Length: 78
Image 1 (cartoon, helix red, strand yellow):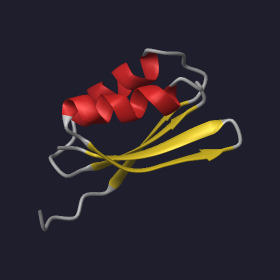
Image 2: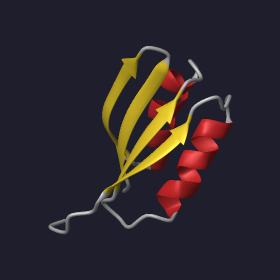
Image 3: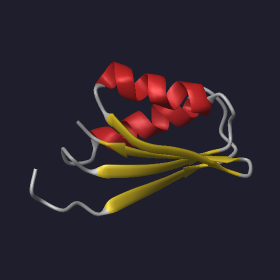
């Protein structure tokens, strides 16, 4: 896809499983194909849940890192 989409940021700090994945799914559904969503979560389970969600839904997990208590994911919408 040749279009450039701005990166959206979704800060889900403080939310516990399954809310980070559910809110990320809702935001991704509203984005154009190829759009990139940066998700910030503090629930340690998100380190497992977010990659699994991307794999199941066909989204591309571009990057996953931890910054202190925050887990940061960059997801490209399928």
